[in-house]
Image (cartoon, rainbow, N blue to C red; front, side):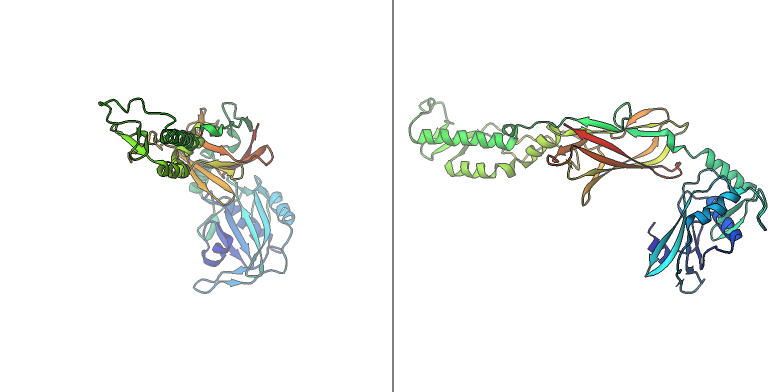
Length: 396
C-alpha cells in the first residue's frame, strides 16, 4: 500500500503502528512490537512508522527524525532474543519534507515467534501478538491459529513457473517470415489493379467479352455503355460492377477496408503463440490465484482479444468464427503489456498451461537485442507473499 496514504489517512490497526521516536534506549518495546506484528493474524505487510505522533481524536503530527539507525543494530537485538528469525527492513522515508523511519515486516510464515531467552520483563518462551491497535500475550486460541496458518501456508519454493513441460526459464522462438504479397489488403489491391488493366483493355478494344453476344447472358463481364467491369458478386450471386473511378477509389481504400482481415493475417496466421506452464509441487491447492506477466511493448504487439476470421464481402454480414473464452486479459501500459489470468484453484502435483488460449504476439523488435525479459508475479490466498521472477525469451 502507498505509504503516503497510510501516514495521511489510516488509523493504527493490526498491520500499522506509529511511534514518535526510535527504539534506541528501549529494546523491550522493540522486541514486543516486532514480535507482535510478526505473530499477527494477517498475511499483509506490516509497518511501524517512526517519527509520527498519533493522537486519538486529534490531527496526526508529523514530528520527523534527525537521522535513523542502521538496520544492523535492530537485527542484532531481534535475532539475539527472538526465534525463529523475523524478516524485516528498516529504511528512510520522506513525507512532506520530514524524515521518517519505516520498519516493514513481511514474509514471516513460521509463527509462533517467541522470546528465546530472558530480556528484562520479557521471559523466555513468551509470545506476544498484535490484535487491532493493541498487543497482548498469546493464549491457546492464538497458538492454534498460528499453527493452522503455518500448516496451510504453502512453500513458495515448490511452485515453479516457466516455458513448456520442462518449465524452462529460457526459450528460443523462430520469428515467422511474412510475404507482403500474401497480406489480404495487398491481394485485393493486386486483384483490383488487374481488373483495372482488363477494363482498359476492354475500353481500347484490345479484348472483347466472348459472351457479350450471347442473348442469354444478362450479366456480361464488361458493360460498354457504362464502361464498367464485373469485380465479384453479392451474397445472392448478383454481379457487382465498377468503372475506372470506382476501381481507383477501392484500390486507395483497400488497406482501411481490409484492416480486420489484415489483423487476422498478422495476429493469428503469422503471430507467435506464447504460453507458460506452472507446477504446484506442494501438497495442497493454490487458492484464489492471480498470475501477471509484463512483456516489453517495444518487442511485441500483443492482441488484446482473440482475432476473428472475417471473410470480406460487399455484404455487411460478418460472423465471428471464434470465442473469446480462455484468452487472458491484456492491458497496454506505457512501455509494456500487462497480461493477467486468474484461477479459483490450481491443483497440486499437476503441470498445467496458464492460458487456455495462447497469447497472440506480433514481433516488432527487429532493431533491438535478440532477447527480452518477461517478469511475472503470482499471488495466492495461501501463499505468505507473491512469487516474483523473470523468464528469458530469445528469437532467431
